[in-house]
Image (cartoon, rainbow, N blue to C red; front, side):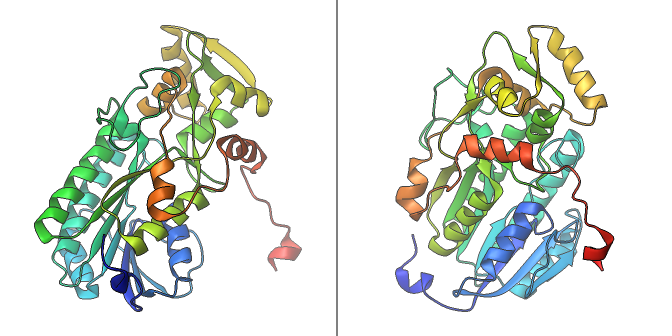
Length: 330
């Protein structure tokens, strides 16, 4: 961890990759209010999803390596907050999400490493990196072995490996925030879409518990990590847990009990209804997905404010389409 004198320095330049996503734009808006932050620069393939007062944004495809290098080295960041991660079937299908995520990690993290002022790297990861649950109540901590068993799990594992390799080469700490599934009123989430369907499948053989995290709690964790700059991974998980069947009841959905080959049909139907079930969400429904988040509090001094049960309750309250009367819009 860097000395306190570094943390209290004002005018720190922060690069936020993935600023166009809901989580990225939320992190940027919180950074704008931080007294230690000077300039903020964002990169993404989509523009920010909220109005930002003083952040500078560049619309760049992750494959445009030369332009990314020019923009990043010209900005010369002190901190990189890497959120350019495409969860499969959230904003893009699995193959495109994998390609965009890989290109962004290679181009942006490598470009930041060429910056003379770089002091820390903070990357988005996920608790999918631990793989399938080894029991309904298993809560791996950050010291548990990683063994990703889904495409998304392998994607975040590759991001961590790239960041740690670059961090070791240039001598800066790397924080990997392993997020539980992120839900929010405007967050594109395959898990959220599935649970909001009128009919929701669940496993008859193992209705295992899982945890999630609210987008605003995840954003606070990134801001705290960018300021305090710890070394190593941190699980970011809301307190409490819930099973798919419990979520179905709380949302007053119709449960569809499935076992064995029936899941293939359910997955196909879900895809046609606009709520694809990628591999990591199927794992969550079948085996659950928990993690121990105690180290987040002891390291950064913050705790998620909203429990898993409350996040799920809010999920069913959020409107799919926000309607604004013409008189209010005017």
